[in-house]
Length: 261
Image (cartoon, rainbow, N blue to C red; front, side, top):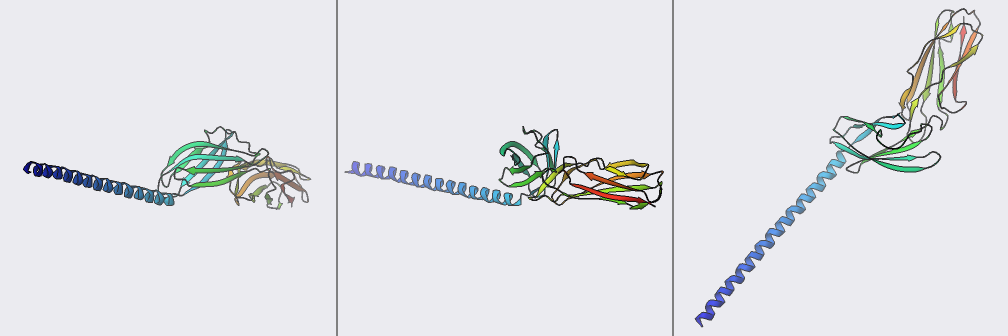
């Protein structure tokens, strides 16, 4: 009987050890699981916070060597990584492609040359929708329009409108991007002014200045300047100049007339 009682005591002790070990293991596992869950929640909260703090804007949109050349400003408080660029050609044949970017930029800095390494060849006569996406899932979307897509508001002003012979006349050509859908125009460039009339010795002295606007955002204004000289004219003579955009809509022009006093 003593042997059986001793064996029962040993077996009970073994079971007790097993129960205690299992309980300790379960508690440790539960604590570890809870810790991992808390860390996961904290990580998700931090990711959500960082995503909300992420902010970036289009700084400039150009076309260089038949490729997009996009510059983006990080206006947020956290670093961002632009991972993809989506491009949609909305002219003629409609197609969509995406390209891997993986360009990082710190707060307050610029990231340049986005699109220069993509395989798409840009035709500035076409219109494109472009979307840039970050590693956190934020994105910005903008469009590149063509000066040939629709007539733009433009005006030519000759200053002064009445001039003495031998004096200079300044031509100011104003173009406004009145495109819809937030379309930015690229490589906005004027043609050489076409001038005719009765004035003699109406000669180009300088211009255009600037030669082109690489980017003209929606609602933006481009002003080009030429300077002409009037020589050998007599009072009553006049000269009318007309200017249009390279690759612009036919008939979309600005005109003005200068009179000799």
